[in-house]
Length: 455
Image 1 (cartoon, rainbow, N blue to C red):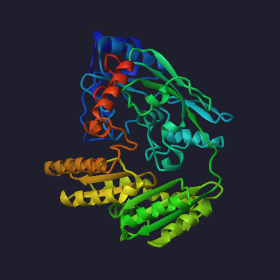
Image 2: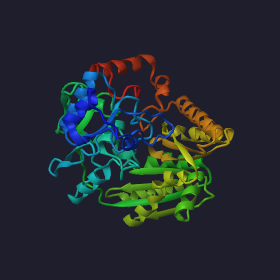
Image 3: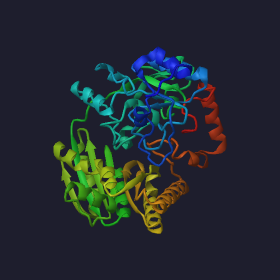
Image 4: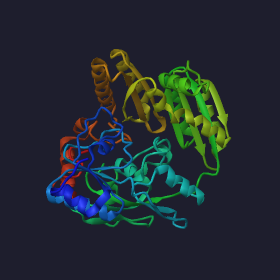
């Protein structure tokens, strides 16, 4: 047990009581996210905020003493953006977990940042509504974390990312002032769009304490297509052909390595000889017609083709993609990448990944959202072997470089965090990065919010 009698931690304990954790053993659980190869430090305290006042008090104290603050949701991030920094305060929003209102008429839900994505989706569904953003971590990740990274998911190509579904944000600045951004109206062009500036800022500008998210009517029907191809390039050609005749809600791709890992774990009977598998889902009144057109677009090159209009069967088929990362993790330590390229350049990126894997003698399983060019090549290696770890890092660097050479983005949905910060300037430019630094300085003049991360 750590006992503190003076200084900022003593002040927090006096003001917030048992919301403050100083026990080193307990704090360990709050020191890092899922990016296990990103560095993490030792906080001086963890504040498990239960109210907006707790957040305000924490930030005022940190501002007064010049202490870094790392805001953390569920810790499901994949870029080290929520890892503790030596001497920081970790500000956890996990207990700010209330769904405040669901307005069926305006189709909005106002929530605290610790609400789990899947819980909001379930609550909306009980009222006949649909919360769309569906990151792979939706069962465990929070709305606050989704907003902080502008999380995506399988249905982004048709419905957009988290930032496309937020109407208003309430946040606390580094000095404890509270701000409100956006509007509940469908149209709003008053002033600069501070809402979208906060989305994706990874805790570097302010701490989100409340958000109003937009809901939709759920689709009336869904239909699913599964297509196997001998080579990944044929699968990408099919994706391009599908886009000419249909507007699927998702088009997911898995390469041979990933299919094999999923099959080993689930025994689903997937075609392990296929070079790539596409899982396609269409929704809306014309779901079945669009699924048939999608299947026809795959037919010329597909080695196997299956179409189903049964929602339960479609959900079961989609589980193959949902467990892709888990299946690869069963084969060793993983270093998960998040790259986005223009869809026509997907074959070049996939070829580059294969060459990099062969050159470094590594297993790399690739899956992702083919409809928007967002891939997740996952390096599987032995983290206890220094040589394997070094080769994994080299492969990671080369994949990012290959993505940039194809005009892509270093991250499509996981964020920059600590893991990818060194790649940011090569992608966006030095002048642009200096502008971002000036924006941060306007929100956080003393630089205490998640310093050294994201921008």
